Length: 148
Image 1: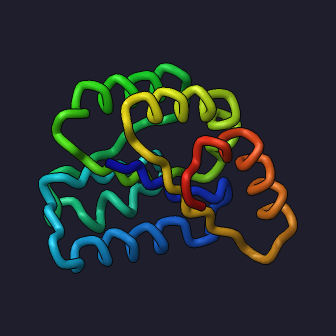
Image 2 (image 1 turned 180 degrees about the horizontal axis):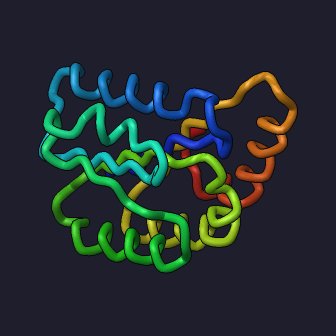
Image 3 (image 1 turned 45 degrees about the vertical axis):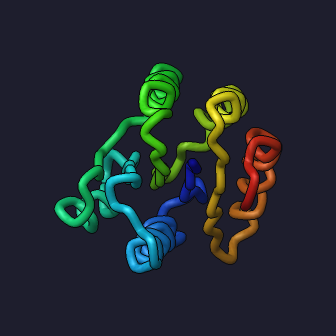
């Protein structure tokens, strides 16, 4: 069971394009079971991943991860669904780094206790702030991420 997060903390760097390509890859991979995949779009302004896969996969949802309570609800959901063997794919919005800085390590601890692994796709552009944001994310949650 895994949690795959598409992050980059900036708008327009290609987070959605990357995660859509990854979902498409998973859908076309031998042995794919759409019933075991949960796609969550956390972008409140531009839920393009939701629009892309809603109607094609059975579990595509819009979620809010902008506050501590939202992360705790997500942990509760993972715990209540842990026997179902779901893999979760989350498309994060731009600017989510501040809340992830506060809640990321605790989220990672809970996820680890529940037997999930976190993989993070970090999309960057050519500007130095993308690298600085990546460095910050690695400090905040990097120890909980199995692959980046």
